[in-house]
Length: 415
Image 1: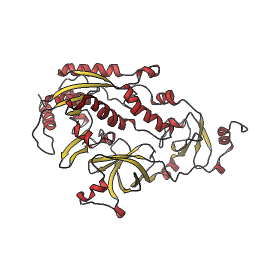
Image 2: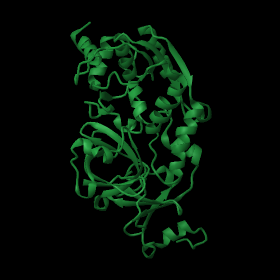
Image 3: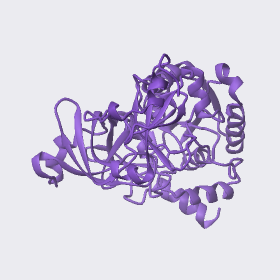
Image 4: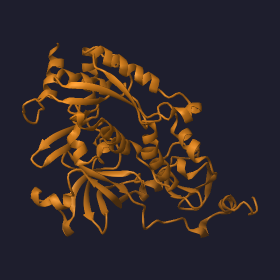
């Protein structure tokens, strides 16, 4: 074993932030057929744990097969090859119906409401650490996966910390886990950089060592997202309108294909143009040119239905020797999307289950339905859904030109 491989195993067995006695456990390993979960499996096995690997079949290939190839057969072949290489048993678990009912139907409902869904957040909460966890029962002490995140046991429970690899960090997608789910989770590669994972895979001669990373929503595979949306929601043509002038610039095929901040796929010249608002009742997509779009960037917005992994920070602040802001607000970092970017923000508790977020710097892609995820230092506290803008500004009908009125009213005279 090379020094690199040996040090990687030691870092997993004895995490760098503290030393502890290693206790062997029975672990259910979620294997996807990619390099990350393959290396995670190898590390957990080498640590002496009793491992059973599981491949979760969630592809919707039966009803969507006409749209393109689903790679689940290829993924499963790689998963089997890795398990054979490491002498670990593998079981295929079909969760297609559960996935459709708990994740796909949520995504479709959000699209119909004009929101931008985040299905991968609920895949983790409701499927991997939800339905699957319930199905295997207490026989397995931990559920392991190839996520880039760090779980640390503290005196009050388990903290979910960001990965040291800021690009690969996946705490955004894990932000809706409960404390019980985090306590049962195990992320063997969580403290590693992606380059280290690749290097270790090659050192161990894993069949997935050079396999490219998967991209996009987990259940779609090679199916294009617009084709998936079209299959379930169809098409309905409507106008693309410049917000500031009310001028009609083009035609879209359904507001559900577009999200706030989008600039690709609009088919407009003299751009770049950005989607800045949607009117779902009249099926209008509003855009602004880049020059004006930056002027419409927001720093303040509301979120709702927060999930706190280990309790509300507004309650726990006393134990932090709370740094805060005026009016009982907290200073936290937030992520608006998966990626390395963090926004320093003031977070204030409102009535009910709503919070007001005021970022130090504005962002032009704040989309209702997406999630804001909260951090204190490198600890992920949880997340909340971005709410609709209560002070929505619709285009002034007095500025709506005749071509737009014609698009909205088929009986109107054509130009």
